[in-house]
Image (cartoon, rainbow, N blue to C red):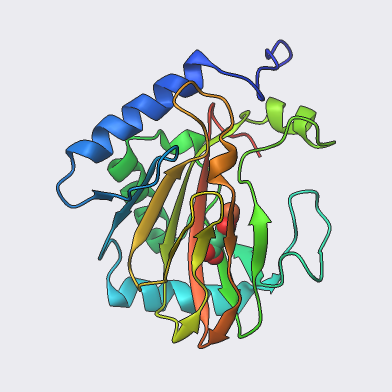
Length: 225
Ligand SMILES: O=C(O)CCC(=O)C(=O)O
Ligand SMILES: [Fe+2]
C-alpha cells in the first residue's frame, strides 16, 4: 500500500462511520450498558467471559508474559510496569474470544490486532496514555501503512482485584474497577473520526491482588502486522 492519505490526526469519514456503526450496535444490545461520560463513547458488559475462560487466559498470560513494552518499542521501567504478551491467534480459545469481541462490536476481524494479555502485580501500573497513534510520533508513518489509526479498544478483565488496578479516564473523572469477566469497549475517536483526547486512560497501580486483562485494538483498515 503506497497511496494512503495521512488523515490520522484529523476528522475522517471512514472513522466516523466505524464509530457510528459500533455505537448503533452496542446501543441496541440489552446486555451492554453505556457508561455516562460526556465526550467519550464507552460501554461495559458483565459476564462477557466465563470464569473458566478467564482462568484459561490467565494461565496463557502467566506462561508467556514478559516485561511490557511501549509502542515505541522500548521497555520503560516506570511508565508501563506490567508484564504482557501477544496471545497465539490460532489458539482455539483465543480465536473464539476474538470472534466474540467482533460479534459484539460488529468490527471486522481483519482490522483487529492480536489479542494482548497483560498482568499487573501489586505496585504495577500503566500510566496515562492514548491507544490511538499520535501522528507526530516516529512510528506513525509505519502504522499508517499497516492498518492506520486505532479506532475502538476492547478490554476484558480476567480477574477480580482486591484493591487498586482501576482503569482511570482522568479527563472524564471516572474509573472502572476490575470485575472478572467484564468487557469494556471504548471509541478512541470522536464522532467525527478525529482522535479523542478524552479517551486517554491509565491502569492505576494494583494495591492488593493480581490484575489480568486482555486487550484488543481495532485499526481503521485491515491490520497487516
Ligand atoms: O489495564 C488496564 O486497565 C488498561 C490497559 C490499557 O490501557 C491497554 O492495554 O491499552
Ligand atoms: Fe490503553
